[in-house]
Structure formats: structure tokens, C-alpha cells
Length: 186
Image 1 (cartoon, rainbow, N blue to C red):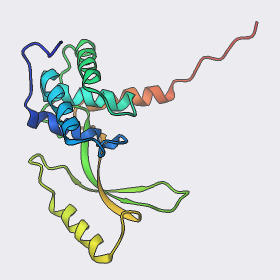
Image 2 (cartoon, helix red, strand yellow; image 1 turned 90 degrees about the vertical axis):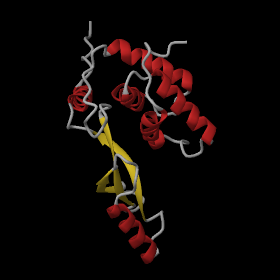
Image 3 (cartoon, rainbow, N blue to C red; image 1 turned 60 degrees about the vertical axis):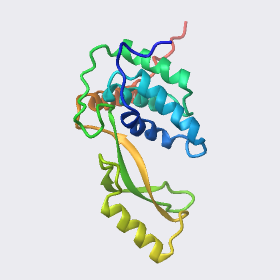
Image 4 (cartoon, helix red, strand yellow; image 1 turned 180 degrees about the vertical axis):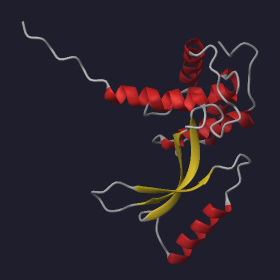
């Protein structure tokens, strides 16, 4: 079993990266033990906090299901081989992972229109709920607004403050503009 080269991060450093998987279906249905296993696996395989963020970022870009511990180990290995000297900026708000989490007010605008997201606040590094978020929750409760109309939620977005996030955004933009070559008739 490959767990990095004497590199590990703490469970407290791995937990926010695993929390980013909450955008995937069934994350909230996971039992506590399963979440802890994902945190423990990521803590064991990640070289540093930026590497943990890159592992989760690459998973989110490629997959729409939750990873298993074995898949996290494989993703860590692939990430290490693909980016041997990835100069992630661990001081960036995304932790070098290329995606930053934030609090949003999500508003359902009807069945045929997409959900509207309004930025409320960045996720605080110490894990506390920002006052703006608590205030918005209180307003929604006082007005009796249900989760089917509006709710405060956490979502991730591409970070453009660090080089890794900018490379991810550029790669996505290039992939969207790739067009298949026209077929030639003989």
C-alpha cells in the first residue's frame, strides 16, 4: 500500500478537503464511519494540504460519484506522477487545491429556470459560521421561507487567486473549445 514518502497531513487538514465532496450525491447519507475513513485515507496519502486539495479537485473534475478509499489512494498516486513539482500556493484561500468554498444563498426561481446563487461569504479558516450567514439563516426562519424556496448552502468554485486554480480554469476553457476534426469523405 502506497501512502506517500513519509508525508502525511493531519485529519484536521484533510477534513475540509473531504467536505468539498459534499457537492456530490449521497455525501450527506454517508455514515460517520465512512466519512472518517475518507478523511483518514486522504490524510495518509496526501503529501501536504495543497496535494490533498489537488486530489479532491481532480476527482471533482472527473467524477460524479463519491470516491472509495482505494480510489483516493489511486488518485493521489496519479496526481503525484502528473504534478511532481506542482507549486501550489498553500497560503491561498483554496489551500492550493484550485477550488475555494464559499457560502451562498440559493434561490429556486421556478421549475424551468436554473437556481440562482448569491455569494454571502468565504468559508472561514477556523471553521466558524460567518455572521452574514447566520444573519441570513435567521431572516429566512423569521420569514418562514422553506428550503424549497431559498436556502443557505456551501458550494465550491474555481479559485483564480493562485496559479493552480488559474491552470484548472484555463484547462477547462480549452476543453470546452475543442472541437472534433471533421470527417473526410473518400
